[in-house]
Image (cartoon, rainbow, N blue to C red; front, side):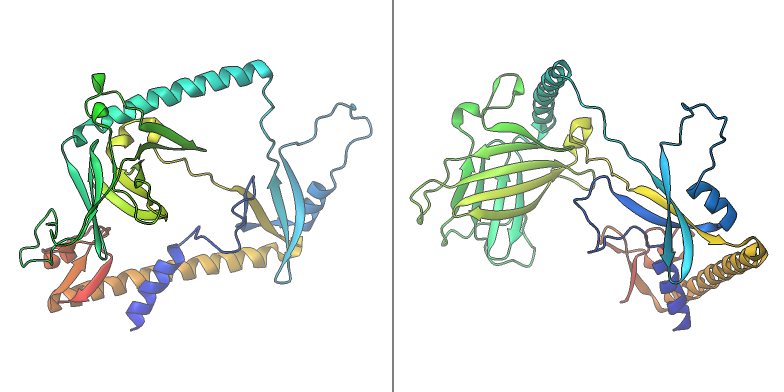
Length: 350
């Protein structure tokens, strides 16, 4: 039990940058407070807070415009925080705006054509998605259907066989004249949508089975998202309004064009805070910090030793290993014997 506690403690210590309900996700620019493993003397802090400008200094002496300083109190301790000054980009003039719009439109047109080209190998293939009662099929550049599959057989047939006794529905289909567009160009049903840095290829299909509630034909919007993990798959399907649907497809194909890559992570601007101490407290502070680092090193060493013991015990008891991909490893014993345990996520009894 103590060994397990040490392992969990070590794992918990490595978790950083978790989302918090207290985060203001709409604030821009964003900041995060970092408590440095360092100190600053009260005299140095006072000099930064109230810089002394020599009387004979020229009036044009530039100030440090990249950061400012503030005092923060935390649990009865005093900290000096260095806050970066983030300036907005200079506004564009009318000519720059027009040129930017032209370049943006040109890039969107290029990315749309290229994205459709990257999806060309999906032609003639269908993807399936099972959700409770309904099963959905997406046949590229043809149609999207909703049907009920037959009860699963012992051999778990794939693709799911359709139950002919229960009515199926077409949620949307490509117009016949767009089945084979010249040079593989995207048809009128296809467009590129951009939200900030996120770009997805979208196909809007109508002409589905008539909806009993509205008297109109069903329609669906199919979104293709770049996802480099795994193969082509339907992520989810949702009925947005009555007989209007949204389907999201994750595919690594679009990741071959930079336009569809996921948005870059916007890291928050760091506000670094150092504890303010008196000059006569420096020696004591440095000793406490050294003791803390030594304790952390010892804890990590004990956790590593405990993990080795657990692995040896599991090897003897023939446990099963589940990797990060969710698949059960057949070679559980061999996997546990490997030095590389990056994929070791969960251990269960057979």
